[in-house]
Amino acid sequence: MTKSILISVICGIAAGYLFLPDIFIQWSEELLVIGLSTVLFFVGMDIGIEGTIVTNFKKIGFRIIAFPLAIIVGTLAGAMLGSLFLPITMKDAALVGAGLGWYTLAPILLADYSTEVSAVSFMHNVMREMIGIVLIPIVAKKIGFLETVALPGAASMDVCLPIIERTTRSDIVVYSFISGVVLSIAVPTLIPLIMRL
Image (cartoon, rainbow, N blue to C red; front, side, top):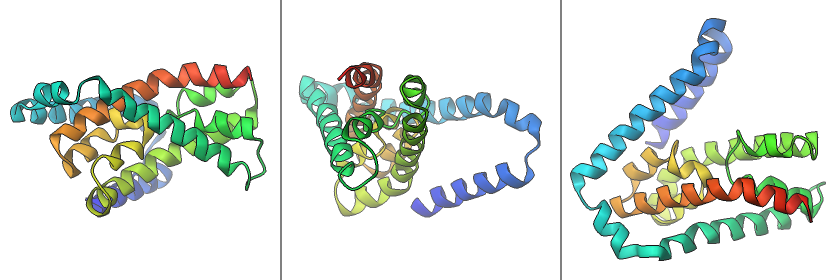
């Protein structure tokens, strides 16, 4: 699966750079939403056919919220630790980390604060999602299923959900979706909070 994902991404980059006409670029966002919605529909259908989603959620309960909170703490701690080795302040590093993989919203929230931090945030969050897409199958096989949810951050509820569903178990999908929702809610809360510090 990792090879298929890598080949698809590379072919997409090559097609976008070399072949596709401008008219396609104008419609690319709509096509992306349609494609992603179709994939998520089939993921949901597969989960529904299996019939264990409600049972898994009841079994896990509200303890499931602890997992995305741990992802937030780990991401912010890692970002601030990175500031010790990079030419960026600890506050700016925390702001970049607070994007939690949501590359469309975080840079917009940071644009008035700093153009440079906004640009770094965009690249960081795009790379987090892309690295997640590539590494999820490897992490699922070599480390563990639950760890795959932390890799893409907020993208665990949409773009990366089909990959997580395919490479792990049905109960991990519950963690993945809830984690993505909590992280997505946290981004517009954390970034303004850290900016005020």
